[in-house]
Length: 357
Image (cartoon, rainbow, N blue to C red; front, side):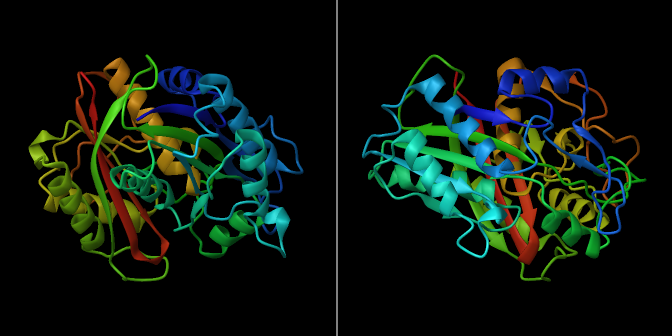
């Protein structure tokens, strides 16, 4: 698996984003009149996007980056499949299919021959999409799978989380004692999975992944971390690795009381309580369907540069299990990493990556 494209509030490609994160920059800032009652909520907003057609503009730019970097041949092959991860797609298409413009843009920009696969499973969509791509490659039907995660800010999303009393009135602080909730963001991320290396860029090996549903609540996670525990256990089994083989965890870490507590319990049950981990939500906000992709890409940059990034906003442990949240950037060789995600509806997903030596 290698880099495709990455556009967030702090950078227009993976190099710019990683450099900004090394400087501990955050793209989360207060947006005027963004709340239902004209409150100024902190959001991860890409300032270069127009007020209208934000989704289409972002997706088109992501496609142009993909073709500029890899050429068009890889995308218009009948041995390539494209999978899109998004929780909402383009709400401006309502009342029609919100994914209609997604299909049109991808077909026009990439010249696709195969039907586009859409995965919309709340905030675990990105991790599930990568797992699904790996399954397609293992079936021997395709040689290449392109996974694109994208979501943009909208009144629907901000008002929705506001109605749940889940929004933080300051930049989110995942796992911190004084965390106040979630900050929503927008982004696009893409990775390319292949059976063989396609260029000299940094590559990682996908070892395995899985998903599980704890069916606890429509929006609240299991208090015992059961779904995440089962997912990670299955991923470890499929990857043929043990808990003590994991060098680093890229956690979901939304900054809400229940999610962060649940993750700490699950990691404790898995024997991963001492493993270094971070949440990247403090840099971008929670980008929903794009989160799994941009966080995997960021983790790949950490592996490439042997540098673990701190969890922005974290100062003091605020979970019942004292997990090893990074308070500072750390230079360290990392070979095998775990990525987790949790979402509405009781969904949990995970995957394991290994640096290609």
